[in-house]
Length: 264
Image (cartoon, rainbow, N blue to C red):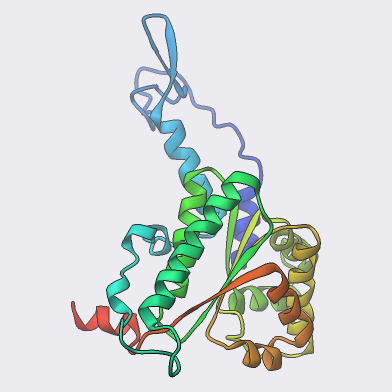
């Protein structure tokens, strides 16, 4: 079954588990014996295992990988961004751009938690510049506050949509699209990293257009400039992205992944 299909299954209501209550029963949580509450002096308290199960379910529902689940704002290292190199003569340095993007990402989370504002973020920059890291930090900050987030790698999502035409899957293209359209916060990673055709352009436009019209925010990462996105994704889609997103750029003189690998 495709990745998004698995996500849909995880979002379905969970059936209540039953077990025989015998002396030999092994509980997932020995503190509350899977009841979810602990009674102390006739006062009932919610067991910590309930919070842990909720957090796990939220991470699974977000389609977050174990690696991305470790990304947080306090782990975003500004030292990877040169305070001397400028993107153009007289322009901001790589460090200044990274500081702006970090501030913008934190501001997005704070604004959404306050008022569920529909304004999103576009993180643009070269390969290995920390765009997905910042997007992951946004996801984890929102999940920590029990907000619904959906993380999609765009090439994988498009492949999953296309696969519905070749097989009798459990979920239709319409159901997969509907999941992405209606997520409270949608993170689209690697927009433009795909062989785009009229079909793929139309699918991305439909998704972005729906979310803009319904005030639902997107966090988007791309290796492309706005001009390159016009050619690859299409003018209509880029126009809506610019309308609904604040744009931040991240640039490094060397891929951070390469630097980290070399330092191992």
